[in-house]
Image (cartoon, rainbow, N blue to C red):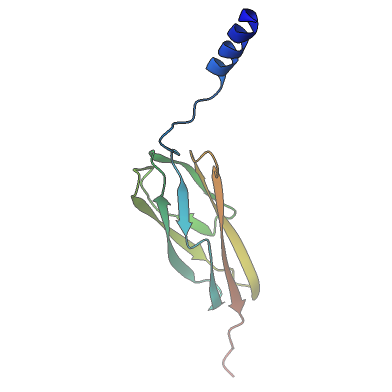
Length: 133
Protein backbone atom coordinates (compact mmCIF):
# COMPACT_ATOMS: atom_id res chain seq x y z
CA UNK A 1 0.00 0.00 0.00
CA UNK A 2 2.84 2.34 0.86
CA UNK A 3 4.46 1.70 -2.58
CA UNK A 4 1.20 2.54 -4.31
CA UNK A 5 1.00 5.81 -2.38
CA UNK A 6 4.58 6.67 -3.38
CA UNK A 7 3.88 5.88 -7.05
CA UNK A 8 0.74 8.03 -7.03
CA UNK A 9 2.64 10.85 -5.32
CA UNK A 10 5.39 10.67 -7.95
CA UNK A 11 2.87 10.72 -10.80
CA UNK A 12 1.08 13.73 -9.32
CA UNK A 13 4.39 15.55 -8.98
CA UNK A 14 5.04 15.06 -12.72
CA UNK A 15 1.60 16.26 -13.83
CA UNK A 16 1.34 19.80 -15.21
CA UNK A 17 0.24 22.30 -12.61
CA UNK A 18 -2.72 24.55 -13.34
CA UNK A 19 -2.78 27.67 -11.19
CA UNK A 20 -5.61 27.62 -8.64
CA UNK A 21 -6.44 31.28 -9.28
CA UNK A 22 -7.63 30.54 -12.85
CA UNK A 23 -4.58 32.05 -14.57
CA UNK A 24 -4.68 31.36 -18.28
CA UNK A 25 -1.50 32.85 -19.72
CA UNK A 26 -1.45 34.84 -22.94
CA UNK A 27 -4.70 34.86 -24.98
CA UNK A 28 -4.95 36.50 -28.37
CA UNK A 29 -7.93 38.27 -29.90
CA UNK A 30 -7.80 39.77 -33.41
CA UNK A 31 -10.30 42.28 -34.76
CA UNK A 32 -11.60 42.20 -37.35
CA UNK A 33 -11.41 38.43 -37.90
CA UNK A 34 -11.70 38.98 -41.69
CA UNK A 35 -12.51 41.86 -44.01
CA UNK A 36 -13.60 42.51 -47.55
CA UNK A 37 -12.71 45.73 -49.35
CA UNK A 38 -15.66 45.19 -51.69
CA UNK A 39 -15.50 46.29 -55.34
CA UNK A 40 -12.21 48.01 -56.17
CA UNK A 41 -10.07 48.90 -59.18
CA UNK A 42 -7.05 46.83 -60.05
CA UNK A 43 -3.54 47.96 -59.18
CA UNK A 44 -4.63 49.93 -56.09
CA UNK A 45 -3.01 49.68 -52.67
CA UNK A 46 -5.64 49.45 -49.96
CA UNK A 47 -4.99 49.72 -46.24
CA UNK A 48 -6.67 48.26 -43.20
CA UNK A 49 -5.68 48.01 -39.55
CA UNK A 50 -5.97 44.86 -37.44
CA UNK A 51 -6.04 45.11 -33.67
CA UNK A 52 -4.23 42.30 -31.87
CA UNK A 53 -5.30 42.29 -28.22
CA UNK A 54 -4.02 40.28 -25.26
CA UNK A 55 -7.10 39.17 -23.32
CA UNK A 56 -5.13 36.80 -21.09
CA UNK A 57 -3.10 37.31 -17.95
CA UNK A 58 0.39 36.62 -19.29
CA UNK A 59 2.51 38.51 -21.84
CA UNK A 60 1.52 37.79 -25.44
CA UNK A 61 4.42 37.27 -27.85
CA UNK A 62 3.77 37.81 -31.53
CA UNK A 63 6.31 35.39 -32.92
CA UNK A 64 5.66 35.72 -36.64
CA UNK A 65 3.33 37.44 -39.08
CA UNK A 66 3.21 36.13 -42.64
CA UNK A 67 1.09 36.58 -45.74
CA UNK A 68 0.17 34.33 -48.65
CA UNK A 69 1.30 36.83 -51.28
CA UNK A 70 3.85 39.60 -51.76
CA UNK A 71 0.87 41.80 -52.65
CA UNK A 72 -0.05 41.89 -48.95
CA UNK A 73 2.39 43.61 -46.59
CA UNK A 74 2.24 44.08 -42.82
CA UNK A 75 3.84 47.15 -41.24
CA UNK A 76 5.68 47.43 -37.91
CA UNK A 77 3.97 46.28 -34.70
CA UNK A 78 4.80 45.49 -31.06
CA UNK A 79 6.12 41.98 -30.64
CA UNK A 80 5.21 41.79 -26.93
CA UNK A 81 1.77 42.79 -25.66
CA UNK A 82 1.08 42.93 -21.94
CA UNK A 83 -2.26 41.72 -20.50
CA UNK A 84 -5.13 44.06 -21.41
CA UNK A 85 -3.09 45.91 -24.05
CA UNK A 86 -3.10 45.73 -27.84
CA UNK A 87 -1.01 46.49 -30.89
CA UNK A 88 -2.03 47.49 -34.40
CA UNK A 89 -1.02 45.67 -37.57
CA UNK A 90 -1.36 47.88 -40.64
CA UNK A 91 -2.10 45.78 -43.72
CA UNK A 92 -1.32 47.10 -47.20
CA UNK A 93 -3.07 45.05 -49.89
CA UNK A 94 -2.29 45.73 -53.57
CA UNK A 95 -5.02 44.48 -55.86
CA UNK A 96 -4.17 42.57 -59.04
CA UNK A 97 -4.78 44.19 -62.43
CA UNK A 98 -7.10 41.42 -63.63
CA UNK A 99 -10.79 41.63 -62.79
CA UNK A 100 -12.29 39.06 -60.42
CA UNK A 101 -12.36 37.97 -56.82
CA UNK A 102 -9.07 37.94 -54.89
CA UNK A 103 -8.37 36.68 -51.39
CA UNK A 104 -5.19 36.63 -49.32
CA UNK A 105 -4.40 35.48 -45.79
CA UNK A 106 -2.49 37.17 -42.97
CA UNK A 107 -1.25 34.55 -40.46
CA UNK A 108 -0.38 35.65 -36.93
CA UNK A 109 1.63 33.22 -34.79
CA UNK A 110 1.76 33.79 -31.02
CA UNK A 111 2.49 32.06 -27.73
CA UNK A 112 -1.24 31.57 -27.02
CA UNK A 113 -1.39 27.86 -26.14
CA UNK A 114 -5.01 27.45 -27.24
CA UNK A 115 -4.79 29.46 -30.48
CA UNK A 116 -1.12 29.68 -31.52
CA UNK A 117 -2.00 30.64 -35.12
CA UNK A 118 -4.79 32.92 -36.30
CA UNK A 119 -5.55 33.51 -39.96
CA UNK A 120 -7.27 36.68 -41.16
CA UNK A 121 -8.76 36.62 -44.67
CA UNK A 122 -8.37 39.82 -46.70
CA UNK A 123 -10.45 39.97 -49.87
CA UNK A 124 -11.70 42.24 -52.63
CA UNK A 125 -13.44 42.05 -55.98
CA UNK A 126 -11.48 43.75 -58.73
CA UNK A 127 -13.81 45.36 -61.24
CA UNK A 128 -12.86 46.10 -64.83
CA UNK A 129 -12.33 49.75 -65.58
CA UNK A 130 -14.15 51.17 -68.54
CA UNK A 131 -12.01 52.37 -71.39
CA UNK A 132 -12.90 55.78 -72.85
CA UNK A 133 -14.53 55.69 -76.30
